[in-house]
Image 1 (tube, rainbow, N blue to C red):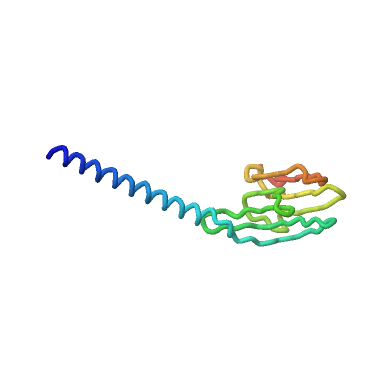
Image 2: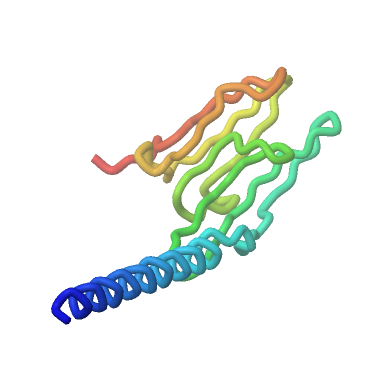
Length: 134
């Protein structure tokens, strides 16, 4: 009789743990789908066409739980990504020959996620954070 009760107790414990693990897995899967959803709001600020090459300055907002990001990209290749919302007054693009100059006086180095040095035959020059408060 004691052995039956012990086996029954272990069965209940294992069923409970199985349901708990399954529930956590489902909750995690739903969370990944909701929070990693690529359908973020994108505001295209500027597009420069240079020798059939579209350089795009855009601001991305993925909702209330994330900050804005400002992205400079060519096609699907992100050249420059910085945390924050920087429009044409704060972030400028200039094309001079085969050089792209990206200037952002208000951007802070620690908020920059990505800075490519070149894209194909275009050299990228950055002027970042020149208005830093001392």
